[in-house]
Amino acid sequence: MKKFSELIEIKGHIIDSLTLPKIFDEILDHGGNYESEEIKIGRTKKDPSYARIKVTAPSKPIIENIMSRILKLGAAPVRQTEVKLKETENDGIFPDNFHITTNLPAEIYIKGKWLQVENICMDSGIAVTNDFKKAYCIKMNEVKRGDKIVLGHDGVRVDPGKRIKHKGVFEFMGSSISPEKSKWLIIKNIAENMKEIKSKRKGKILFVCGPAIIHTGARKYLEILINEGFIDILFSGNGFATHDIEASLFGTSLGVSLKEGVQTKRGHEHHLRTINTIRKAGGIKKAVEKGILREGILYSCIKNGVDFVLAGSIRDDGPLPEVITDTNEAQALMRNKIKDVSLSIMIASMLHSIAIGNILPSSVTTVCVDINPEMVTKLADRGSFQAIGLVTDAELFLRELTNYLFQI
Image 1: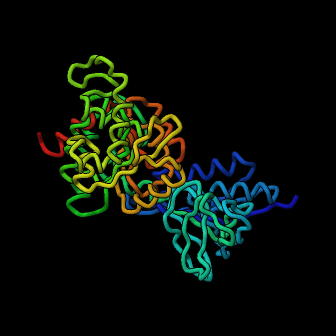
Image 2: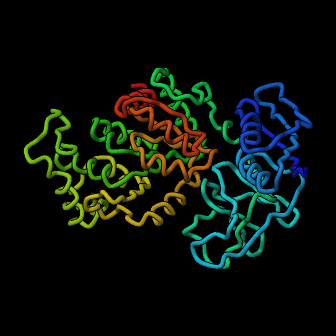
Image 3: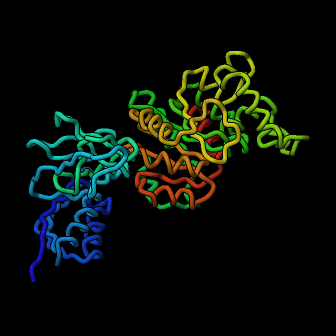
């Protein structure tokens, strides 16, 4: 019986990241077999390891399926074959068998050399410019007729090492998610990482925020972080922005007094009246300029020149004028804003956290904070392997983070 085979190699921290056993599992679970031709294990934590494996399968479709799976984990064919390209025939449609990216750094072999894929993010294709000097991630809705798109796995390799190298002070936290971890030690290390980024100018800090920050009374801590320069970019939605401004105008969040914790008279109307006031003013920025909005998170963002992107959803009231209701437009803007981000902190926002996790490269340290352990698990399950989970309340997290940053 004829067997089909491929010789692959894996380099980097393939032992401590469990990349090698995962590759073995993928091969066996999908009808293949393997033979280890060479394995070199690094002697220290910093030393990379290397493995050369012969993969065999009883049919071509089976080995192609196995290869597509293990390439996403960092395996690369030993034989250097040119990447296969095909021009698209229609806008918004990839060719059949287009290569699908992960959030790991990737390269393609073209014209006799390896070319780094720019703006890497998961669940995208790879396009190549007409002069073959640039390769970049491209989303399906961005595809234009005539684009040169990478097909299959030939001539493509990814770097699994970037999945764990970025953790630094977070490495002790591991990958498991548990409410029993020492929250204070974790938050202290996050604060130290933020200080290091700012002192050494190592990149930008992104916060992805949910409405619970307002409901729990934690907005004052976020204001401090913005005013002191620890937040460069803020992503959220209509609800978060509306409740922040509602708190500024009415002292309530969803009609509940933030001082007394009780429902106020006609408080259920406050969020709609808030949106109407801002729309009448011409937007959040105009409301600040006119003196209508005088404090709060969005106020601090505008006063300090902090970028913010508000993405809409079908459940939004209003929405506020700055909310981007076109999801493709919102995603494209967010992808553009994250280019220099080195730390992302996601707090109490399931939908936005998962969405942003999908566009962040694996090299970005990602901390997900939520009171619900399932939320933190979902982010990792959807491909954001670099996500570090912290199960705690939004107010406690931001209060302690502020305390550690400023030694209050």
